[in-house]
Image (cartoon, rainbow over all chains, first blue to last red; front, side, top):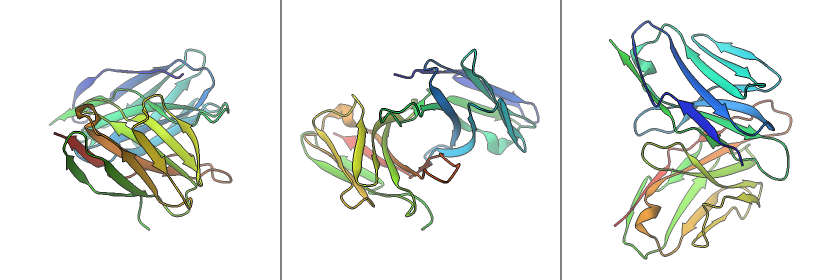
Length: 115
Length: 116
């Protein structure tokens, strides 16, 4: 099955600086990679996703890059703001068939924005 | 329909008791998923449905766990003879597939289970 590793587990950055969270996956058949933001006591919310036919996707201050050869993908947040403080999860999903359709999540990164 | 609804939000039960949780997905979503999340961990896949058919179950889903989606709308997750290790947040999510390019999940707020 798929295995997703996420680093770092905790990331502290100054407000206004950039933050980068990295994930690796093991199943070369995985072809969908979402990122979720979870604030304390709340549901995970999809913030951006990327499919394997695209190398980069950007949405305002958030971008995701994908390197299929190396099997890793990263979340980039620029001009960080206090409201960016949360736990971020990466995930991978395979559409290779056989009914395997569940997302495999990383263990999460606690992002702390220092004022 | 503003999102995925889960009920109850919190459940405290004694070890050995049975519990049942309910999930109401976004109405136009045909896929429904159950995940479990423990403190400091990412959500772990338990099972998913496409319409009323349960298509996959994780190894995490022991015989004490059963899920149903009888009419392809809401779903229930039952845990029999609860154990302390079952204490976790149980998250439901739904998604649509087919014409839509959006394969992203929408999660519910979860049911926090505490087994004492």
